[in-house]
Image (tube, rainbow, N blue to C red; front, top):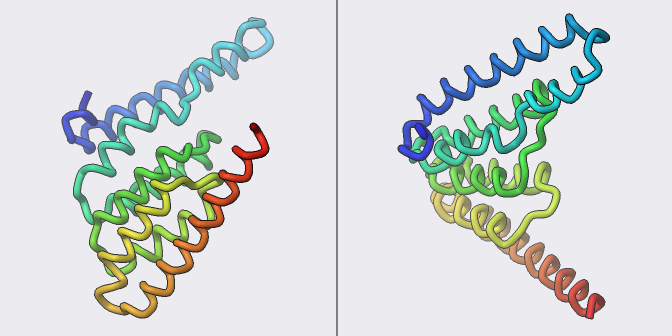
Length: 172
């Protein structure tokens, strides 16, 4: 509810409470392991998924904060390291959007690094956000670099489109 109202700080606080509850539940079940055959099933139900983090991350991406992209990447790292939860493409796209809206000088570079290193199957939205980030950040301080990066991204997008077209053609 906090996330939908744009109050990401409250949403973050609520998420931390949920994660703490999950940790306490898992620790209690680990202490009782072997006593109850349904322990593993309950532990699975109490573990967070990407959907547990999504409201917070979407609220953060739309918050207008200049540090939203970096905060989202911090959450991605926590999700993966502490909870073994891999963000999906939609969450990564939200982060790319946040970088694009930040207006920071390095936003294009950070968004492109995220696109190239972490997103398994980027889509048109992924590329559009990175292009947007370059147009609003690096382009102001180094137009030549931004133009070269945008050309490379457009070439990647064209190859992706050709691959999708060929897959669809083979499926017919």
